[in-house]
Image (cartoon, rainbow, N blue to C red; front, top):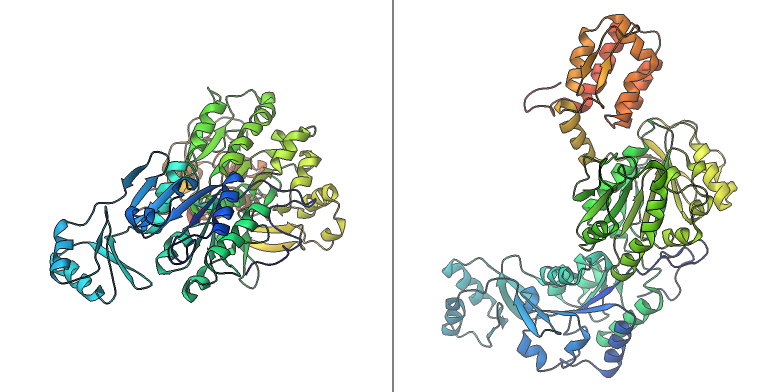
Length: 595
């Protein structure tokens, strides 16, 4: 059942109680046993459906009935933007009054064979073929005898036959795609076996009180009342507070693990977070880890990249803009119309001093798209000290507080606008002196008591996370798999180009030996004289190159420890650096070989 009063730390609000924008833009409803009792929807439930539509949200029906069966008992199809019929096999548009089959119907001989076998009742829709128990055995025998690739779905005595892979979830996905909506902005409500698939696909899954026990067990919420009264209860909460206080924890994103093995997880909605630390401290790796999990979970993101650090792209994201051309607002927004497509906004083509202004001018349009459709789900701002400096506009700060998920990445948290820092509710510190980051944040939010007894320098791969709702937590990062694989492919044996290559020049600049990747670096390092090797080692050139151009902060931090060193010989430091590189990149440069 719903909690009567949302907890004080409810999602969807900031510290001042301000809403962060609407999370749920669509309600997907099963018909029989959920909206309807004995095939009919009562007046109170109809009034609730109308209230939901007036709130600006969309209704989608997801039913096992075919069109003739549905229209024989329900005449308010106009309330729904799309109707998924035949258990996901057909999509109906009430405005155009058009049906679209989403799968190929079974051959006619299948239904003919069932009739000859005496299967009654038997319904044949555009795609679905349906009967009732106890004819399931005959149905399965007929599928086997004809050698057909069909599936049987059971629903409270009904036996529905559909093409393999078709269910209510695939039908709902097609409906949301047509509407430009995401399942992450959708609430689903149902009661029976055939509802499992589409309920699990929704960000928040709800079972009415009369639902089967197995359905209730797998849902995020169970209503206190049955059928239409339960849907009315649900709608009142959606319209009233956007389900604030309901936290579907199954969607939380893992970031790290604490000492006892428990995961540190990040809520995908309502988290407004900063990752901060000095250069080569691992902040980019931590940001990449979170970004990877956001993407894999299907949340759409818009990443503002002022220095072109993501020019190689992020998996499942389109990069717009480059050093020669600035991206336009229109092309960014066009990409974001599709909730399955994320975007990296490369601002190298915008003059350095104009980049904060570009972002601030674009933010209202981005917020308008999100207000209308619920996505992008995450806004990520790299080099936040540059993009969100002191003086960042008050109205823009308000808009930042309304995004679903916000991530700022910076090496200088003290240079980020203080009103922006007050919007945040989570901070992650990495590298040396994490207390400096925490103290900057605590001063902005007025929570000095939470930063006492903090650890000193954090080793590579560890972070300190502080949510305003609790105390700082120390954890080890779960590294980003995709980021590491991408680095291995490109930087081990690819070509970095002249600007990003490493040059062995020596103490008197008598050499000019270019290493265009890590393989070349190791080969050249083995051959240069000791003076040249140690010249660059003592200057910290190797770790600086690895962090800046190879973009592997974790490796850079490990190499920096060798550079700071203990007086080891040139041969020994060569061996250590090579070993560190090979441990991370061996067997990725080429199929059977190492560096």
